Image 1 (tube, one colour):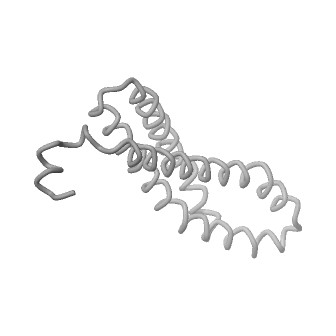
Image 2 (cartoon, rainbow, N blue to C red; image 1 turned 45 degrees about the vertical axis):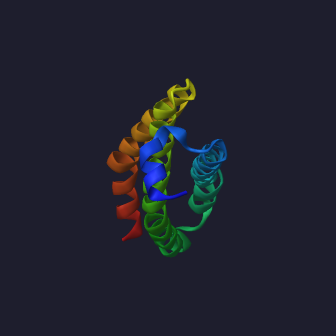
Image 3 (cartoon, helix red, strand yellow; image 1 turned 90 degrees about the horizontal axis):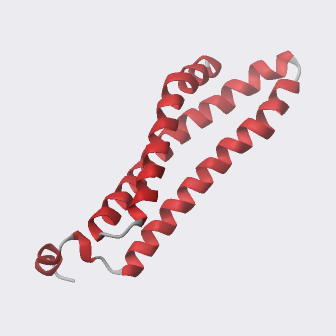
Amino acid sequence: MSTRIFLSRGWSSLHPKSMFALGTITLLSLALMSGNELCVAVFVEPVLRALPEAQQVSTVPRFAGRLGTFMPPWYAITLLLTGTFAFLRLRHGDLSWNGATASLLLQLLVLAVTLTMLVPRNTRLAK
């Protein structure tokens, strides 16, 4: 598709397969991030707390450092994908933008909690 045709038709005429692909990638990214958070909270944290104190001192900072490096870009990419999907759905004019916008707002709330409560804790544990 040439740039001229794309610009004249605008965002609202994206191919349905493109929208499906974007929605699938966004959902997969959100699902994997949620699964990762659940895994850490339910499985990894109790195992780390059950370790003897000496092993916790050496293990927890490595784990916190790895998550502290990996998770912020994942949050940003997923937020960008969700925002793009919500914007394109709004421009497309169908009602599925309501769900995408609700997802975006919920994700912003989770991100605010993460940045204000969990990141400082993770930073202390990584030291």
